[in-house]
Amino acid sequence: MSASETTTVSVGTRRINTVLSQHARSMGQLRRIEIYNDKFVKVADQDLFGRQSYHLNLGMLEPWPVRHRRIAWRWLLGIAYFALTTLLFGFYLWQNQTTQTLNQVLPFLITFILLTCGCLILFIYYSPNVTEFRSRYGSCPLLRLLYNKPDPESFRHFVAELKTRILAASQAITFDKKEMLAIELKELRRLSDEGIITQDEYRRARQRLMNMHF
Image (tube, rainbow, N blue to C red; front, side, top):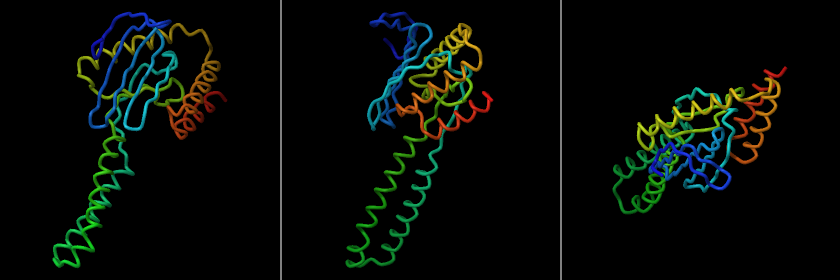
């Protein structure tokens, strides 16, 4: 299949409707998103830290995505701190150009340069430009697409297809709202246990669901 393709292919018990493949070289990330059996999505993600995959029922997603640029402030502050320290060591070394000073300061200077580069890499990795599909009631981000990857046309086509499938899956639901809240809470707990969403994301979504329930 190409990067984004709308078709129907049978794989075991799955009928794959649409596929989007994304590659972010700066993050070393490969992502494959499959819409299958008309109402499910499978996400397979591989990056520098390993692999993970999970499945979602499209009926639990909000059909209107949100574009979101996440800023990893912790790593941004790390860049600023280590870069400033590097400059201070460099300035001190420039002011005291002796063999003794060079032997004492140079190892620290190299260490802080490496730490700055490391924080920069992690900042890029943890600050992706994404389009998020969130859970219907808890507003928890469950599906993140790298914005305009692999190309704008394929990305727009896949997002449009995904929205159409979500709406169709939602219209086929026969449960009432309280039942849907319970189902979503159960699914969010599963995704939290699998490490797909963070504990903080789960707690915030759970609080929203409990407020709606009562």
